[in-house]
Image 1 (cartoon, rainbow, N blue to C red):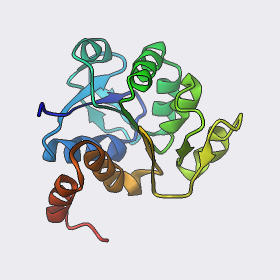
Image 2: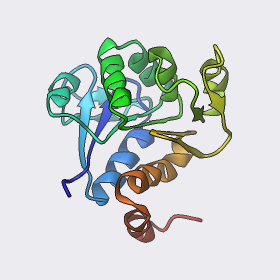
Image 3: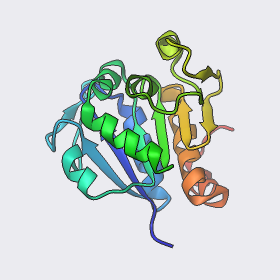
Image 4: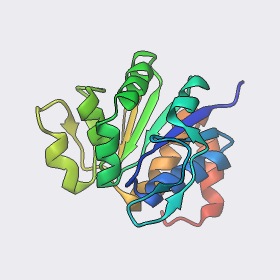
Length: 189
């Protein structure tokens, strides 16, 4: 079986934990992860002024596709930047039409709304993004910490980043691998 591949799209204003924790957990599971900078390969200033360095620009990363999952971190400004990007729209439309996994956390799911992705799905978001996400009544809202509906995984915020990341691992690699990755993390059940 070929190694699973993930692309995490990193935009200015992304929430640090919602970016780094999924990248770390997926890599622990043996998933090949590319952090793709929306604006290029330069370091990206995140929501709490942490600088993260992309592995590649989004343009370069797209050429290395397809990916088994595309991950959208949250952060208000980060989600806004994802929502305004035609390149992100193209990536998401391709991912959706190919029936490959899309995962978004916190305010990240609002980019799905902006680009018309996964209408009719059950989703969750950060509580402060709920009203925006429900504009137009395109989704069914869930209060779950992590919600999986078909090829879509959504989650609530920084505090659910581990659960979100483990749900991605389980969807791609199976429960046994997710459990093996989780065990040494000393997470509270």
